[in-house]
Image 1 (cartoon, helix red, strand yellow):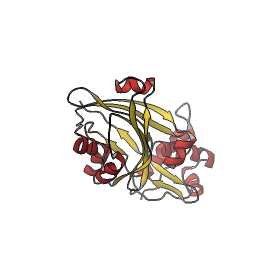
Image 2: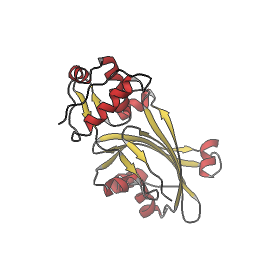
Image 3: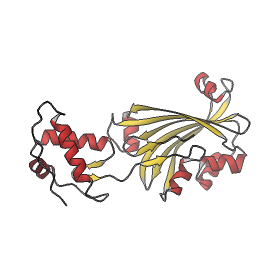
Image 4: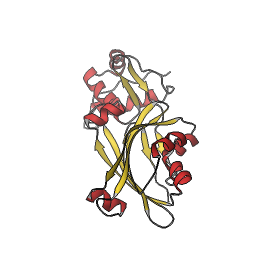
Length: 241
């Protein structure tokens, strides 16, 4: 493995931490996924910089999903981000297609009356009863997203059927005849709340991708409106027409 070059003092160029960051990216490119970086003290000496500057660069790379930082263990090269591209399939189907092992933990499943905002998304009357399903989505045993799905109409034995089928879309299709024909996703960024951070095993304030999805069947009827927050360091969303 080549030795990273020492970082020179900038003269009107990019900030020093950014130069350190670029040197780290070069070093990381020579390592295998999951490999550990040298201790911070050694890295700072090799790059000719302070540990304060080094830590700022490491923190940015961790936030971008390039590194994983483990308290007391060090810094490790992160695996590639999970990519969700096939909009008419479920996340479960996409992850399986990529050879990953998806799983979900149901945090709550309630039969509630739709408030005005939810009813507008589902195109139903306020007060109609819906299912509200909250799940922690995982990939290869690691938390990836918190998903809150709002599902109109009657769905008897939903929890048991979902546990059996694994995929919400497969359950809606095979058990209730609700086939997803079109979806609309809106994506924005938010910061992790303390509750989000605890479930996703990240730091409070870390960037998340917030995705709102409206799914319709062949007749144009809304069968799902879902709010999901994904770990920004582990997820990349790609839309294809």
